[in-house]
Image (cartoon, rainbow, N blue to C red; front, side):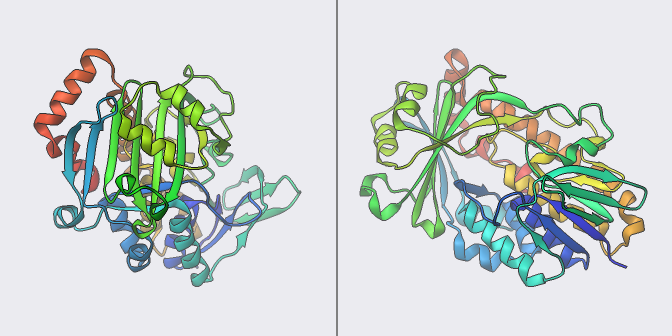
Length: 397
């Protein structure tokens, strides 16, 4: 008999897990704390390692309809605007890794996954389910919500994000520790390209690197919209103000104060973008063992297991990789096979996730470098270019 699996969290990771599991014949019920299944936020970059998994889920055609496919990634100095390095994407990525590099709006990717889960029809979608407690036994798990509802299943997948409740069920001393508040703040905004001056429209991924900050702009929604994100070190690490609120209203004045001096081209782009939002970034130390991802009938995917700073653009990607790997490991096994399958899943996934977490932190230090380190970084980028920017270990995985 297929397993009955409860999925806590209806974001990208949770829906990807539910879809992958349902394609293996399992019943996957998804529990979302919001009143409706929806996604806000901004853009997401999906490397070939991720689009390859989405193809495994038969979502490649749907993805092509919502994505932009930039032909290059271009790195600039935030202070002077000068180009430091360039890496071809487009056909080059497709030929090198067998899958494309695309940019999408989070809501569009979420909607694609949600439609696919609904089309499968072998699980329920529960909204307004704020999980309060998780209980496990030898062969059952039970979820209870703050409004006194409860559900039983034979396993649980925690896809409930940075402040995961399900994570507390892991057999590790770190399970109850809160995530680290980094002191980095991200500002984001989106605009229709047609409403922007022609000089500010973008068909490629553009990155600007500056002291203690960086900015990125890339097209989404088939290239019709532009997504802009600026990340700056605006508070001391460990400052927990508004740490749980990842969708705060922001202002261009606060953003400019955090950024300091930058080139005229970047300033013009920031001034043209409407309705800035802001959130504080959090992460955890890189994983150290399989115990950080699963225990008995409990498994974690995405940020619930391995939240990471966005300096490798792989947060959503690792959640999707997790989801496909979890379903592949369980296969068509039954409820009795769950603990062993979850253990194999965690053993296979944790080293890669730990590597991505560590590289994301290191990238943040490089992106935001000052002084001599910044000068060395810029020189290395000018000399090595695409060879420095490409990530075969990641995109080929």
